[in-house]
Every structure is written in structure tokens, then in C-alpha cells.
Length: 147
Image 1: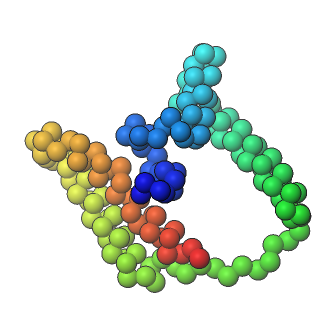
Image 2 (image 1 turned 180 degrees about the horizontal axis):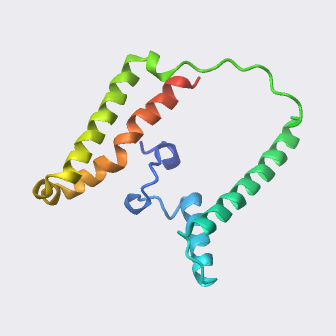
């Protein structure tokens, strides 16, 4: 993976990432959080989060309009009829990944409810499974349904 840009395999677990010093998304989020804190706002407050999302969407639309103009694309023109991508469940590999996600979720629920000794012994592993177990089927569905 050395030659692959790190953002191609980003899992949004920035605390574990070796590339935060190069990542524009991480830096922008850090700057945004620091700005909120200096203004006396809580960056995790839902109203502040919604304002941030609105600002990001506004920036995205401006970038999209600039790029479309450069490429001679009229964004007001209706889109051509697009063929729907195949449903992920049509792929056996996706069904297997989905079962993994469901079974992992059940295991994690069971551990949260019952087995405190195991949780203490395998805290790191359980945390990682909690983080990644849904990403396997989601990323696979995206890959299988794309061109």
C-alpha cells in the first residue's frame, strides 16, 4: 500500500493514523474544532455540527460549480437516464460479508451485556471490531456496485 495514496484506504480512525500531518480533511476538522473552541463553542454540539455540515456543503457546491464551468458542463441541464447499479445482495461475497457484519454485531452486543472479564482482557481487539465490523460489508457493497 506504500504507493497508494493514504486517503484511498482511510477508515476515519484518525487517532490511529500515521498520515494526519498530510491529510487535508483531518487538518480542516482540527482547524474547525479549534476555531469553535476559541469562540467558546462546543464542536460536538449538534447545532454547531449542523452549521459545519452546511458550510461544507456550501464549499462543495462552489467547487462543483467551478469545476463544471471549467469542463463546460451545465448543471441545470437534466441528467441522462442512468442504469441502476446491481444490488449488493446479488453477489455471494457481499452476502458473506453482510453475515459477518450481523454476526459481529450480535457478538459485540452479547459482550456488552454479559462478559466483562473478556472485555477487559480483549479491550483493544473488541474496540477495533466495533469500529470496523460494519465497514467490511459497506465498502464491499460500494466496490461491487461501482464500475
